[in-house]
Length: 340
Image (cartoon, rainbow, N blue to C red):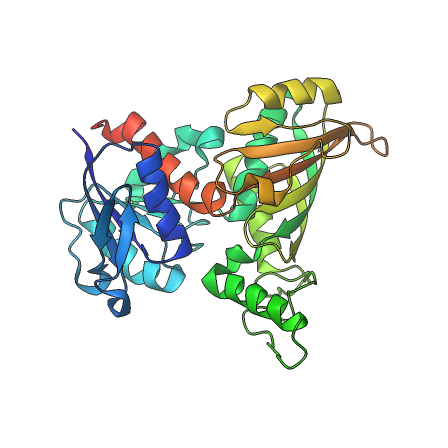
């Protein structure tokens, strides 16, 4: 016996990936529906070897559906997620709307699967920010061994984190660089993204951090441990898919780099590629389409007493969004609903 699954926002980048991953992982499904806004009504999307025509979100009745995977942004989620949840359908939300709600669990299954039981307060489960998701997968097994005091992270985030418009802007601006008669001014990003890096993701806050940087701080505390101090600098880079992070970790206890490497090799969801030679590490183009979070460049930080540095790369459309949402659905099924 399988589940009745609704994918909301099925025509977007993340929605497409949700459908792909549900099929790839053979999620136990009796019935699946693709839902989108009215302007996309009837658009065809792929699910394995099947083709689905999208239904209208505004008129869709979630009664009798088990799980709804939402990938439509905060504004639409604010309207439709509570309606779906009220029918008994469990909402797994990819937007930022519910991440900081104390009555909504924020889940990365490799890290805090046990917290999923809290979903029943609102019938909603939140998916974390893409940059947070891959980082906490790397941090949790190390925290369990040596207790993390402080994390300093710099991100190198691909344009797909800004949706199709971001990917189109990078593509169009890149072509324009080689065509002197063409000009593509920035619209999605505050400055030119082609052949450039932009230290600005989301809005600025009063203390000078951006909302993206604040998200990494708040979400890491909620998912792993409120005592961990986190400071982040989030940067948009001209890469289509795949987020990278340079992470510096300070521990309460000494953790040798070799032991850390062994711990990470055994940890769920992680692939360690760490050879001290040219090319002995993973870059974002190599992680696209993969389920794993890749860790490279593991080394001691000699400037502090108990420090490590590492490089963390993952497909942000997968682990940072769609894959994690599907993994939450799998965890919900295994631990709570138990139909599959």
